[in-house]
Image (cartoon, rainbow, N blue to C red; front, side):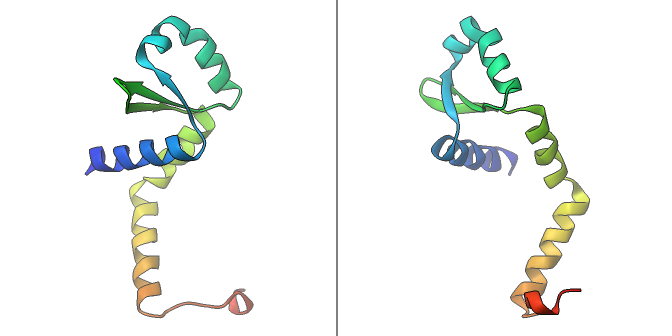
Length: 95
C-alpha cells in the first residue's frame, strides 16, 4: 500500500510543481539541491528516468507526517463516510 501511495505522490508531484534531479546529478550537486530545498524548492529524484524519491522542505514534510497520522486518517475516513451518506452541512449552517 505504501509503495503505491508513494508512486502516486511522486508522479503527481512531478507533474504539478517539482523539478526533477537525477540521482547522479544529486550525488554531485547535493549541497546546491539542499540549499534550494531549504529555500522552498522541491525535487523528484529519478533513477533511470523514473521517480524514486521526493525531496521537500522540512515544513512540507511535517504536513505529510501529520496528514498520515492515524488520528487524521480516521477523521478523513469518517468524513468521507458521512459525506457519502448525505450527512453534510452547507457553509451557511456552519457555526
